[in-house]
Length: 483
Image 1: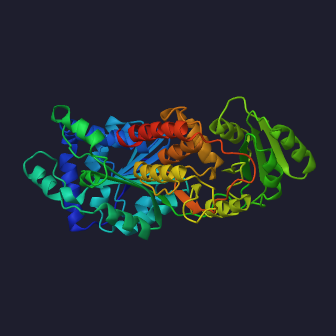
Image 2: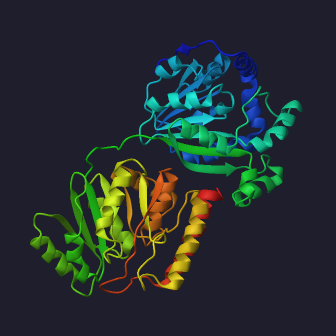
Image 3: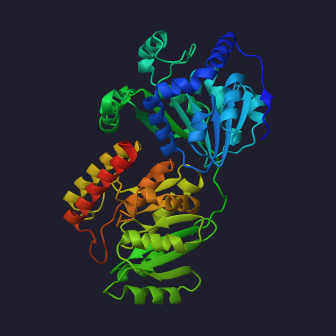
């Protein structure tokens, strides 16, 4: 991208803000260093939200520090302050910077999109028409693009104004003071779908280590977090499906499930551009592997793939199946068929229509058959759903339903980032849930009717597996909240 200047007439308010930005540009880096604790925490969390090596557009980039901190493969910054852009070009010659008012359609038209991430860090406070500006960004987005809006909490307005008067904070001009709900509403009006909300920094000063301790362990707690200084909202542009006729791979982990194999094939619905059924057998003792081979031969017109596990556990089986899958969409169907294969059509409609990017079932909405779930299991499911709804800031009613659906391209991104959480999940459910949350995917639940088993017995060891789930909650807290 060439460095061009894009201007249009601005309001008196914005002219004053521009003049203030020009005047403080030479000293801006000094202000950042003076308030290093505040800025470093903000940069750290933005790096959590934005992976390295992607195409990033920073609207209202100032002198370019945040954009540089994110280490993009292609970084473009736009700001209406010529003085700020001059500093940014000098400090970060490997990035592209443009002088322009992002509320100008001409400025947006000059940007070579699409981008993987678009950032408005505090910029929304300076805009004259937030809704219209957000709407103009849609041509720069793909279905995978994430828009990150970070801003001050409106409850901090009096303190921030006082800090400016006392010379403890840069002069910022007359701002829009918006709540997180206001920002969410503006995004929805502009046809963006909010996928994540976070609150950070209860104390913006180090205070001999007290600030870091409070911000890490107390600031994320329910109730308290709404008092934090920084708000972060992540959204995606509402778009049509990625492919009109995507193909599907259904992975069926199975251990001692001989009596359900043929039924799974016979009841499998026709989906999209074709269905690939992948059985992954895990050291069965009841002839399950032999039954899979028999069914494959008997239903030669069906695309059936037969795999055997090298490792153990459902998580290992899912990963082996997904690694071999060729479909655009990946699905998990438990071999016990307590979730009906016919219900996979609902999951396909949800993901192919763009209503979600990670679709998972919930068994706890509709009444379930007698003995389908033991009472202690039911209570544990409710508890873990509540905990993960808090940890992920997305609604969950049932995290342990085995039926989960996502795009293969998104699964590959989860695999690429798996080191962040580590190889921790023997079940395969939380590896995907936490990975989807880290990628800011839109998570959508689909209620299903949960049936009792017609063959075999449960593989769940209630107390042993319950302890493992508590360990996962602890891991999720430290990886997603107590950063």
